[in-house]
Length: 292
Image 1: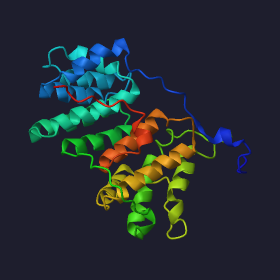
Image 2 (image 1 turned 45 degrees about the horizontal axis):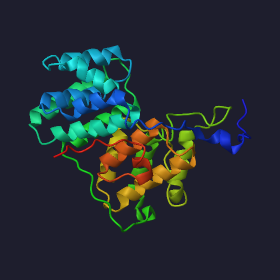
Image 3 (image 1 turned 120 degrees about the vertical axis):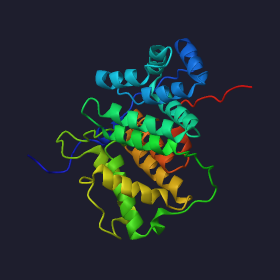
Image 4 (image 1 turned 30 degrees about the vertical axis):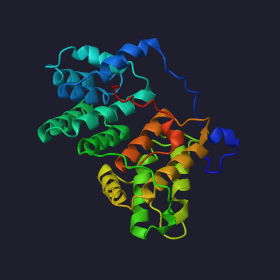
């Protein structure tokens, strides 16, 4: 088993992403999207939010959703409408419905959080994306709103050692999703693209502190690190998301990130209450505001 560096050409070290096709004007989506936009019942918003968290082809998770939605008229049509949404539309709709629920009763919001947890554990397998989406759900239901962009920029090098360590820990969590879910970089199987991304993100601190290993951080440690990042000065948060994005682009062949990486970075921006880089934002189709 050789541990020598890979001799593959640079192109083999990239995440290859197929160009996405625009679905704007797709007649198959016109009616489902119109029905989603017309939803006004808080129970429908709850069910739509949860439907957007169901893992594709997981019958166990779907059964939990069906039980939750048992009192909603046309529940199965709602589920089918959401199932038709392409990946780049799903996260904007998830955020839209969660934010509609945020001003509502605490009990109703708690009900959604509990149901989401029960649903994502129904099949006995909880992925990192499941965890990230669930944490984002709690954040959105608490009334999170993206702050407006600022013109000024700061440098992450000003972070003290403790906060820089927290950036590393949460980046380690993200590295299993960005720039692609644990995609192997070389044929030897020793180097993961996530490790390379993590090394790029944490490079500014290699000479200043002992950068923690990418592995060995459980979800509790990652959430403690996230809470520290949420307390960072606002101007530093979009700079951090930009660093995550730029490191992913460096390892991506094409104009767009891997869909799951794009979702992970958008959710990270949501959790930090900051806008994502415009290039990342263009990978999604936003929910159009109501007319009139």
